Structures are given as C-alpha cells and as structure tokens.
Length: 100
Image (cartoon, rainbow, N blue to C red; front, side):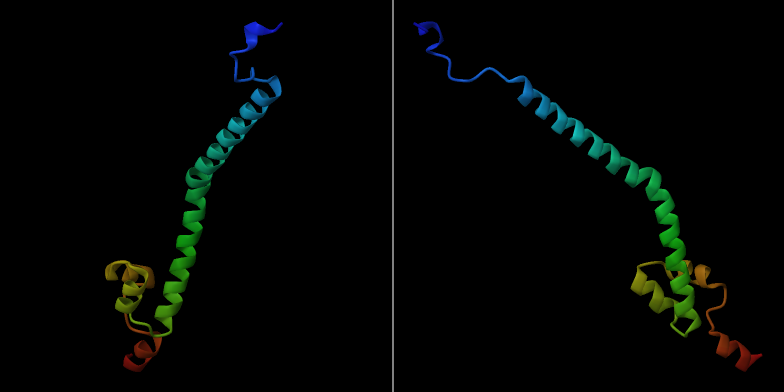
C-alpha cells in the first residue's frame, strides 16, 4: 500500500506557490522598471531643477559677500564655474558702488 511513493521527500509544486513566486518576480521587475525610469527620464528634469536651485543659492551667497573661491571650495566646483554662475565680476555690489 503506497510503497511506490515511499522514496519521495519533496512535495510537488502547488499552483498557488507558483503563482506567488511569479507575482513576486513581477513585482521585482516592476520595481526595477520604476527605478530605471526615476534615474533616467525623471532624473534629468530633477537634475535641472536642483542645478537651478544650487545656482540661485550660489548667486545669493556671492551677492552677500562670500568670495567665489570660498563658494567653489565649499560646493566642489571650479572657481571659473562659480564665477560664470555669479557673473563676470567677483566684486560685491557694495564694492561696485564705492568704486564707481
């Protein structure tokens, strides 16, 4: 009685367990897709917005007397890049009016 199945130790896969495994991997695939989209398509737009915000902060700091070299060192940019963001002159507005 039932001697033919005596050596079997692993149960046959149940359809429900297979469905749960497939559902899990579909979820992982969708997560990978969302992450890829976030880092490529949406990332460009976000990067532009963050760069614009950074540039506004750099201009505001420079307008309040922080030297371009100090800003460049703090934000890890080349001094020429900071000077380009702030404008060609590195003098503060107060220095311009005192000279001119």
